[in-house]
Image (cartoon, helix red, strand yellow):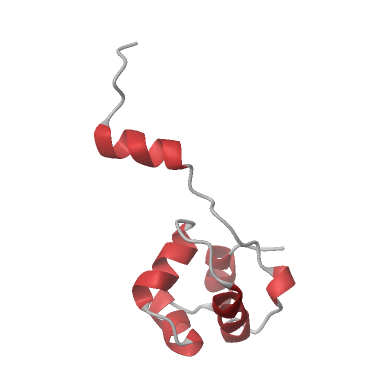
Length: 80
């Protein structure tokens, strides 16, 4: 099982290429690749077909820790 960013690297495709092949917006593909968006079943089918692999061979889901996103955006309130 591989992540989409690893599959993109191995295939040599750019996110724009993947978006075009999958029929999705570049913004949506970027969010999926960054781990900020979990794709719907239809989006998973399109992405897997564009990467020439099965849905089960891709690791889907959030990979970004939302807590870290909040701290990066607003800063850590406590002083250590």
